[in-house]
Length: 340
DNA sequence: TCGATCAGGCGAGTTACCTCA
DNA sequence: TATGAGGTAACTCGCCTGATC
Image (tube, rainbow, N blue to C red; front, side, top):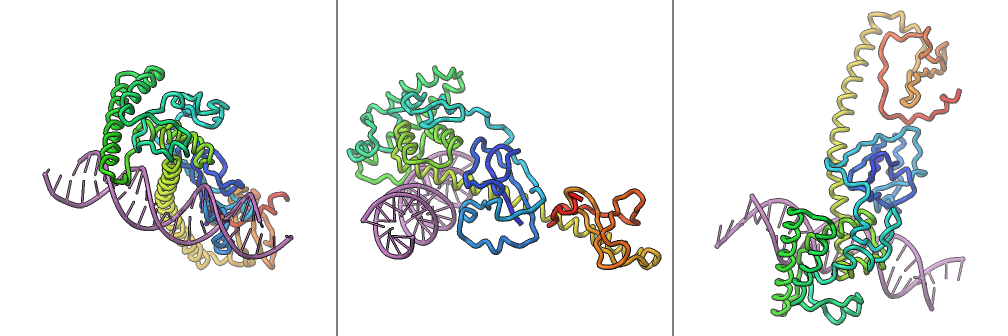
């Protein structure tokens, strides 16, 4: 059984059909594909390679004629097709080709000064190349910058309230930071502000991995250490994967129930056929024949080693079957018979 | 060309801290 | 006010990959 997952637009091809390990981040909807194969090659694949890393298999490694089922688990509130990355000034080109360079970005120009996590150290300034305002100026700078931010985004009262709450958050964080610094304690963990989280979230939608340049630019824009940005993306990927796993489990559980039910029904049908065999021996004078049905072309063909029924197509109108045939969902069929 | 070494990145697992009911 | 649960930032470890020698 093969499970292909992608984060992104539902109709997109499954990741295991593409030669890519990248997760599509255009939206946070869950798109899950399930392919059941009978060749058992999963066991042969081993533990190395991209498939292990991302749970994705290359399409050319397993070839199946049956298209995988696709389950769309999109969020109730769909993510806008065009996330406001350009407004946020992401440090890399978006799909629209905008927002190249953080300095021209929306927050890129204004976000300086709301560092909630640290007091700038000399090494940080060297490493990040970002001049950080003094601790005492953080809050006022933030309020000034975000008042502009609100005005620029045309926010209403609710937005103003949220921004104010974020300012409080930031102030609290700054206060904690200052306290820790004064006490000479090393800060273990501090909360990111809502703005920082939202900005990182938007960035993650664009790219779920960062190259060093993007990391540095983001860190500068958000006044975070590059390490913090890196850790945030790592944790974000982990959360995404965890969520996917939960969805996978739920889906596979339902799928298992469905297969169990189908198996039960087929067993019942088999019993009926056996009963028919005893009551209508006429049918049993036919040579032993295996009936198979291709789920893709929906043709039932007979295969037999002897007798008149070999290779006959029972879908032709003049041929009838005294019983119903169930179309299996998955089959290791090849479509060699389809061309004929 | 091949192997050893190193740096950097990432996933997985864990810890520690914070918030909230 | 104390407490437990849940969320999450940060850390550690091991593995992989690419660059360099």
